[in-house]
Image 1: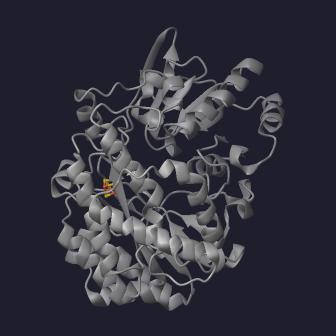
Image 2 (image 1 turned 120 degrees about the horizontal axis):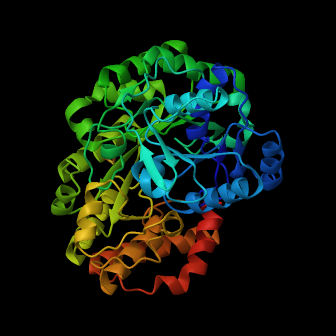
Length: 482
Ligand code: SF4
């Protein structure tokens, strides 16, 4: 199994897509090797060495963008130096199976969750049997490509144990808690798959058919206990699409964690409408006691029209309610925004800036990362509307591998809107610093800078040429955040 590099080189998140697929293979007696391109080894030599043993196949994870570029390079090497088949899985291959299969370096694709089709494919190849009827598998026959849809989802309570022994887990443990920033041993963790919501930019509706599946509270807390015991983990970054969908399960998780006295810190995802409608102050208190020290929310836009167009199903009133009540409960919070959605106007971008400033005034300690740029991913609702507005999608794996908003001109984003968006990306973190302590020269400089950002946003002066100051901004960020 090969996990190609993403945009950054530092390995932090576990290569979960390959670990979960490896689990049933290991259970069935197959020998599995995981090569994580991010881990810094000489991956080409390692891959070449493994190919000499003639594995049944090499599996690749594929996420739109750089990961495809790296998967293509490794697949090329496999096809050039051996007759071992390549199997591509992951979100991109699942959403565009036919296009992925058309690439000469790809022999099979996995559509949807990989556990069952990969195991069945391995068994078929080992026993030299037909694989054509395997659900969730795509294959080639002559010049034609075929794929069978995924029919069932994995029952997470029956999934085999994650084979952490196949990787060097220390490569994936951060030395600080993602929830609080304090020193610790932090690891990524997963407790559910999918999401029942319908956000128009999200892969979930297509990939997970809007179906949320959660592991039971009992089992997931047992797994946490084991990680604490075996690897000294003190902090978990739960990377679920949406952890709190089943509130009874969430309550049980909290109760078990308190009973077990695990003394861990947790960061995970939530929704502002959940906080307002389904989480009373007692539940927030319980979450805090159990270790949930920080929650992340997608707000995406300050404009009700854009929120509606994105099918967020939230309101700004819920946003403020969440900011206030999480502060009261002592739980840190982080809010994500997306800029540049189809038809979004400059006025609506200003509404986002206004909302952020107002949220910061309500609680200066909230974290607002740089705005993410809207990207029309295949299979999402907004992908279709983007195409109607003139967006021309890439047509091959090679083109998708270079899919980067900074290089693509979305027809609906004017030059002026681009300046506002870039300002939101480069200077937003300084808004957080305007009220913070810290005596160093760079801290003082960033406080002054933060106040100018607040003032300029208020006055709608978004056309400050930030890019000429990127060096200085990076230097300040480096000095403060490391
Ligand atoms: S709530 Fe999050 S995971 Fe669910 S559809 Fe919206 S963006 Fe996707």
